[in-house]
Amino acid sequence: MKTAAKLFAVVILLGVIVGGVLYCLVFGGQSGSEEASSDSGTQSTAAEAENLSDSGASGSSGTAAARSDLSTLTANEENGTTIVFSENNITVNGSGASVSGSVVTISDGGTYIVSGAMDGGQIYVNAGGSDEIILLLSGLTLSNKDEPAIYVENAGQTQLILAAGTVNTIQSGTAVEISSQTETSDDEDISGGTIYARDDLSISGEGTLVVYGYLNNGIQTTNDMLIDSGIIQVTAVNNGIKGKDSVTITGGTFTIVSGGDGIKSNDTTGEDYGVVTISGGTFDIEAYGDGIQAETVLTITGGSYDIVTGGGSSEATYSSSENWRVYGSNWDRSDETDSSAKGLKGGTQVVISGGSFTIDSCDDAVHSNGDIVIDGGSFEIASGDDGMHGDTSLTINGGTIVITDSYEGLEANQITINGGDITLTAYDDGLNANGGSSMGGGFSWNSTSSSSSDMPTLKITDGSLVVNAGGDGLDSNGDIIIEGGVTIVNGPTDSQNGAIDSGTESGGTCTISGGTLLALGSSGMAETFSSSSDQCSFMCTLSTFSAGDELTITDSNGTVIFQYTVSKSGSSVVFSSPDLVQGETYTLTVGSQSTEITLNSVSTTTNGSSGMGGQSDMGGGNKGGMGGGNKGGMGGR
Image 1 (cartoon, one colour):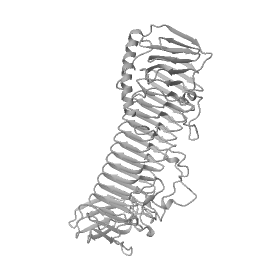
Image 2: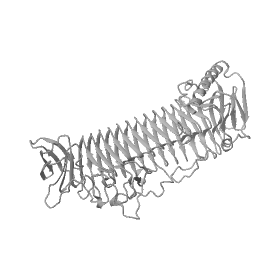
Image 3: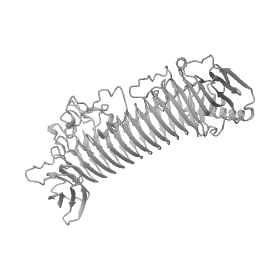
Image 4: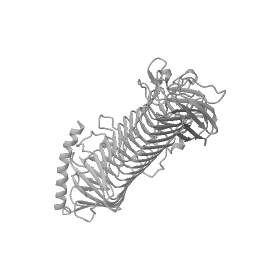
């Protein structure tokens, strides 16, 4: 229903735009002027307006291409009604606007060229439900202590166009410090935003817009918001930019400092609502809430992003009440339901196919309560929690992902890597396909995502993956399936975790049928691939090797089939490659240690050092009898 309404509204708005522009060209600047002193008078507050039912046509998020390009107009050109603010007066030259005290009211569709400066003023729009309002900001400085400085109560579509070469500064409220302690309600009945529209709002132009939202949000509409150009700087005690129904950004340069979310859409009405779609722009966001948050779907196809949330990853705290550091379960999440400081967040889905991202987040860097799909883009991530977390699934098809710091690198019930270049460092598990055994049948519980009845699966079909994990390197409470790609795991140095850890206790399997994998780590919980695998592998237990040791694997002819410089100490080596052939003998050399390994089976386990005791072909970790991923019965995160 919303799509049909929008198409109808576009037809109406196109007629209004054409008529308005023709009117301005013929009659602009010829209807006299109106002037009043700013000694009295006020308009309806945002609170009063919100108590009214929403009215007016819902414009289309795609009207940018249809509207006239007025960004190069100046206040001296007679293309519309001019409104000039001064210390004590508001002067109107043209039709469609009237003055009462410090408030100018716009009641008709058309173009309004606004300039000047006033403390305590307001632009109040109360036009027809299908009227197109164009506000050309041409050097405007406007503040209002108690209400939105620009308030659109009713219109079909309002366009803010930033005149080239101008700086426009809009403020509501009194300046306060923006911090994580700032608590401002997001209830739209209170104060809305400094620029607050109850109908569709779009922003474009070649000028600069500076917004201070000291009452609540910076720029807000209760319908759709479209931004396609401009230099936009927002400081707000709550959300920086909020389009309740949707936010669509195609370009522009953004600097946002917010006590809440940086960019947000939070409508839960239904399909196509609560979405954020970004195809371009440059974003510098410092938010104490989420950087960019969509109640439903967040889609990003381009742009450059520098995002810091919650003060950054260094602000993440760990519980000191219990010594969980060895087990990787020390993240204090006691207030997770009360606050969220994620970098990119989608309620149902996050889809990213392009863009450059630098994210330093106190919480997850990329998060979805449902699915995440990464088709491309470049990511540099430091996270106080997970690098990327999908409650349901995480699929990576391409892109370059570097996670320099995280609690867990990649986490979801279903993790699939079909491509990309991934390098990650994690305090606990590198990759975690979560959802543990409920001890009553099925798969139902884990500590960070909603319950799932699906068998947790970690699947790698292609791409390059390098893991540095303090806990398990590749962890699944169900299946681990390797079909291709190159995977290198620098696993744990303690005896409580393994470089590979599958959920055999839940009926999961650990198999490999293609690709190359090297997994290094401690031997206490070391695990290898099942004998049901289609590709040969071996696990060899050695005396302790050290960071910097050269690891080489050669065949019986002395041909090197794999070589790597060890980055951490350990004693277990798991290797699989299409070059391995059952029945052949290979030489494994790590530092000064060297041992011959004959592949007597598809999955061979051998002891390369005397007295160490090799493990049998278990096909899964034993973890104290509780199974890989359950961390002694506590459940993998």
